[in-house]
Image 1 (cartoon, rainbow, N blue to C red):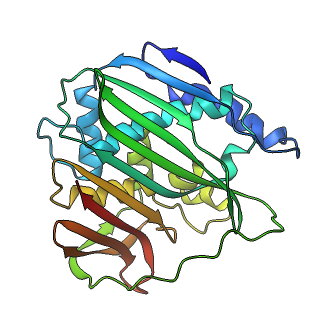
Image 2: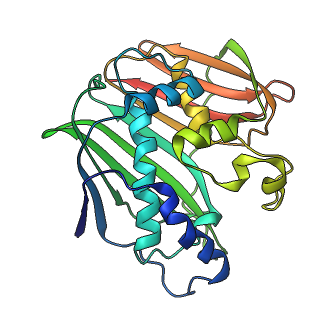
Length: 284
């Protein structure tokens, strides 16, 4: 596997010209193979001002610690460059973020020196195409303090169905915890801190160009908003599945169900009760 080292996190916007090129120059229809490469930021410290701005948008407290999901967001700049600098076989703007998992082994201090790495996982079949993972690891020295898995779907015609889905699990006994009014500018506010300026999140006009009636909230903002409203253990794994789009503006409900130290949660539309995000917290 090839490894590329960085002295600092690359700027996401530097990858945008090649993303746009992907709209003009179509990918070949040959066999899809993911690059065998790892991108590594060897040493960096979190920018406290940037973290504070991120916390303000998502609802986290400024308590001297770094939310594990924040490191997953920082890794997205590595992901963008991996998809544009390497022989990536899919159109970036056609990808759908369907699942995200983050875990931390302990609380991570704001002043700690970190390394951050990202590599591709395997291609797997999906009923609507193929899916693949980005695998992220954050370390303090040789200690792994955070790991993340970001799963994307690349839509394409498929002649064979993916493996039969497991039987639907019993719905958790959710309790309503809060109702949120998600403002129209949430996508733009989150983009300024995350660096994710995908046009489907920015404004209704740009979202309509991609088939959405309104702008939709970032999935990672939805997950962060949920985690910020939970009491998380020092060591945990948080997995979410992104369901239906959350249009902006929107009124949603936040529900939880707790069994022992583990928590199931869901964000659903207040009016029609359809889910936007479902998730599970496992205490470690």
